Image (cartoon, rainbow, N blue to C red):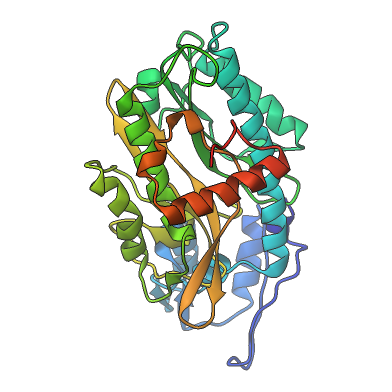
Length: 358
């Protein structure tokens, strides 16, 4: 992947440093040792939370008198801020993934009322849809959950025996890599039925889907105060789910880039990070009712500075929502305005799931 290549250009601000050397090494411990031995050092800085035991052992071996400082996160801070070129590549990758996911959701929703469509069938259909868009690999193992399995947060073994039975909830969480070298990540669900069929959702299904959707789109309704920490952004998004009487036992968002989970930005109850300009991060609240069904709505965003005091959350995911599961009476006017514009964009891209009634 180009993002990992040692031939990639490395841009660094060395204005505060009189002498600065950068060496990019891949898969060669002897080369790493040789380069390390060229320099006499007193202090070694690295981030211990993202390292295995190899680096500290090499440091002790080659620099026995050096002081090791393992809480340094300069690389994380640098990586979290995406460049213009990276942002262009990431946007392109997410449009391609959005097309694949929307195609798969439409297949699952329509075919599940006609015949047996298993969790594995849907996962395989998505895999082919990604390939048709030029994907070179999956970002992670696809979560394809039917009925009660959609309420298992990290259900990652799609079964050929569990089908998307009419009247049940479905959850699909997936992502892919393209030649640009950045991963995508998106979660959507659907109701097996609806539309012109005689199978209609129950009130509890519409309740949890609508509450999760309202939670997921809060950051798009107005610019977000830049002073808010990742923990406070989590509380803001999670709040809509709590207002409906629910909660979820996972974080609201994680960094996304060359890895599907990157440090440097995180929305969770335990987050230690602030919001960061030009960060790429997921927004994924959920509601899960054991043995019944679950919903997670995951978008991925760029944090774009809006003046000096706020961030505008730019959505990278354009996969339409399932309007069979949305209670229109529970949407505020600003939410309706946002969703109408969002679905219009999905229609333009060919990524709607079903027709928006707004």
